Image 1 (cartoon, chains in turn orange, cyan, red):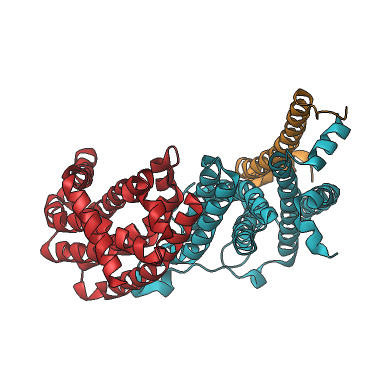
Image 2 (cartoon, rainbow over the protein chains, first blue to last red):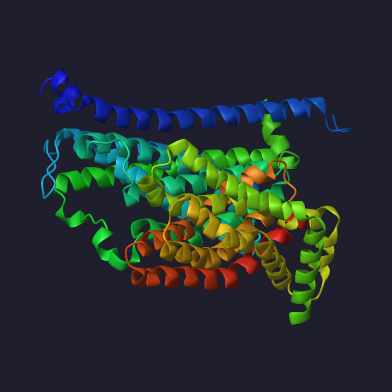
Length: 58
Length: 248
Length: 223
């Protein structure tokens, strides 16, 4: 089975790859977005901490 | 000390962090194997009473996404109930963290359903009971997220949206039933059925692998989101400060 | 217990009668929405007769939705609601009284005006009768379910639009069977019986459970 044959999915490439493409975009996109949010939260908290250092012991 | 120790956000945060790579790896592996199986070890046609050509392969993402969308709503409502009954903060956070992933799976199920419907029914959208139910489920997810984000006070947001989730769960069977059978005089005729046992075994195997992969993916995604929620909520606590200082 | 119920009911109705425009606004909203549809989809008798039941029900859903926002808002703003939370009487009963008043003021007028609207859509007498009956059973369910949403969104910015997002999906069963009954009555009135049984069952369940849920929601929103 050639690559082209696989990609064409018996002539239904549009429907099959539109579905799998959406799945890929949504799931990978969610992961990327979650990682980015996590890092944003950490940097924001770090900035807050530096702005308001704990009094006395440092 | 038992597993209840992890009901405290401070101890769940590192645990979730350790578990996420495992869930993600298992998810990636079973999705990849499932895809390989689905594309290369299955016949090019869906047999049975309803023969379909290659486009039936949408099943490997459509059905798992639809199942996960419903499962995650159950998870959301269950954590909401636990939160309301036992007044545990982490439960509300889990419920909140499950909602966006559930909404994404619902959207995915609708999207792939449309692209499956076009070649098999000749239309992108049909008011088929299952598609319609999925659409309503999507609305419920959106309502939950909207209510949660509209309330500034975290405690009220948690509890109010938890109550909404439970009301939604109670109403869901009624809504689904009314969509399934709009005419109570001839209900049985309208009900749509599909039989898993009639499915070709390789197709079934690939579908189950994908479902398992999506399920593990949900764990990873929900844990990642809940970690973010914990950090924002506990920003004032000593352990978060120590953590942030260590990272900086 | 009964006296508390009547007391709140009487109070809410008296208050509303002092500002009658609120009641009329809901009613005219309903009439306007229903009157706009023929302008949009054409005035063909046959089409109107088919679309009529659904349009009337969707308009009723929207109208009762609009009025819901005010269900607890006034009492919340002037602090009455907080006092109600502290009374020894069960909060669910007070909620039920408020919902009943709300339905008498916004739901019942819709039922009363339904025959007029039916005329606009060329519905025959049986269908109009069915519509009145179905609205009579169905609109209290809308008020009861809506009370939960109104309690949850109490005092939030953009509460009204949020409320519709939360509650409209829950209205679907009422819409399906309410409109279905009217459609079926055009063929054979005897066939509408299961529809009314279902609507009646929904009403009973909503009467029992939604005051409790709304009371819980009020406590969450106010504490």
